Image 1: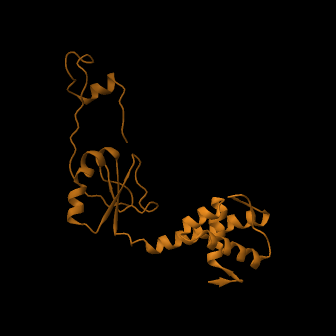
Image 2 (image 1 turned 135 degrees about the vertical axis):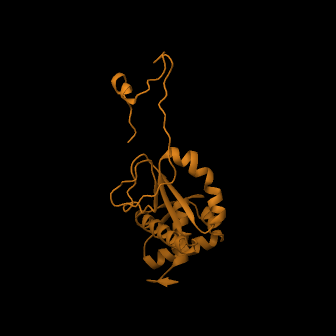
Image 3 (image 1 turned 30 degrees about the horizontal axis):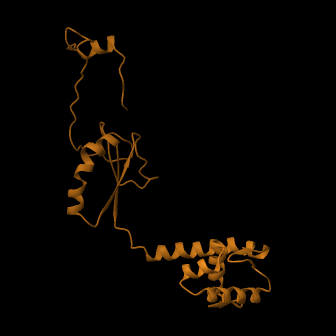
Length: 195
């Protein structure tokens, strides 16, 4: 393809030779001959009216105009490569984004994901683990699993399972055994809370 009197292949040849500081290595990368790279670069220099390389014994060095052109072409070829990669990439499966605590994900949810994937292979599950309450709108969360009473403003809650908790302590803390009333714990200990 020609644009402004310059072939795209000549720009590719220049970019590879400049990046690799060698016509031979550029030829290897582009699967062409050394003379093809040389002809493309000479044609580009003629079309632009400037020297792009100083030719040395088995190597090349960029001139001022060559140094100015190289980053523009590198960025342009990177952009083209990214755009082509996005077009080639298969469309993502429909997803289910789940937010939960690290412990619930690790101990209960992750061990069951294989069965879910086997039953619903078209749905990609993405887990987001955090101790913080999920931001459903900001992070596009579909489902959250949390411990609590189910009274979160703006959210609909469904009880999945009850959780039974029991206080435990070292026998050295209370040699006569745990107190029967929870109020006794409040009088004698500093309580740790998980909100």
